[in-house]
Image (cartoon, rainbow, N blue to C red; front, side, top):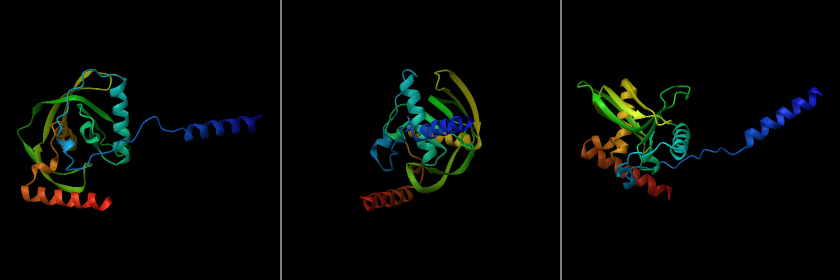
Amino acid sequence: METSVAATRRLRCTQLALRPSIMAKLDILTYPDPRLHIVAKPVAVVDDRIRQLVKDMAETMYEAPGIGLAATQVDVHEQVIVIDLSETRDALQVFINPEIVWASDNRKVWEEGCLSVPEVYDRVERPDRVRVRALNEKGETFELDADELLAVCIQHEMDHLKGKVFVEYLSPLKLNRIKSKLQKRGRARM
């Protein structure tokens, strides 16, 4: 009897493992795609559609792999951000309709990268601490004080919602070189 119980458990585990994921990996737009410059609209209501978007964005971010993703980057122009700075990838933070309600006068330079600008990293100066107000995936309002990498990540992802990509903080010469490099790379893949 124990053998058949063990076999049944193995079969159930195998069936669960073979089920397709209900989350879909989304395509990430690559700079200089003009859709990255569309300003995101506020989310009117946090419902099952938005919760599914959050799940899909999280899966996409983890698979990329990245530490933050804005809905704009997956061609959804609503104010939704997911961030996970943990090494174990189990501390997802969700920011819906985020707004910075306070920013420090102190600024710090961080090297930034972006899933929409692959293999490009450069230094950007931003406030070193911020307070953000947003909704979570349940539609509840919260405020969070952030510093260090979390502050940078929140500001970086919020820029996407405003239609701005981090490389646009760089000099025109650097920006043109990056555009050319990415356009050549895109043509080579075709």
